[in-house]
Image 1 (tube, helix red, strand yellow):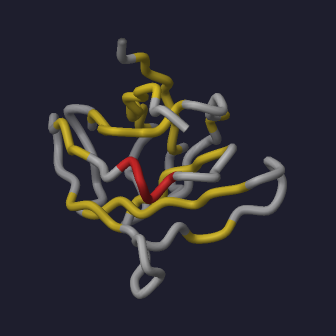
Image 2: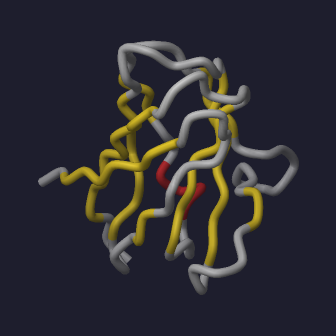
Amino acid sequence: MFAFKSVVIANAATVSSAIELARDERPVMIETPAALTGTAITFQGSIDGTTYVPVYEVGGANAYSVTAGTSRAVALDHRVFAGINYLKLVSGSTEAAERTIKVVLRPVAL
């Protein structure tokens, strides 16, 4: 069964609000709104919900990034988010208005 949580990127901002991930939940997709200024999304993760750091690809060579656009369902590699308790999305551009992005979550066997 899939669930989703929404994050909001405020007008004139790039970083979203945070969502808390359950112990066995991993993001598997994002659904973008009908208007989105940025064309790439990166991620910030946190263990404690206070200190956020960039999320890197498995292996740690590059920041994990997906191409974004308006009204898209973008698949994510759930392995990248292992061990992350809190997650924020980062738009590649300052958003021209408030944007709500859905994060689709799936239980993953630990």
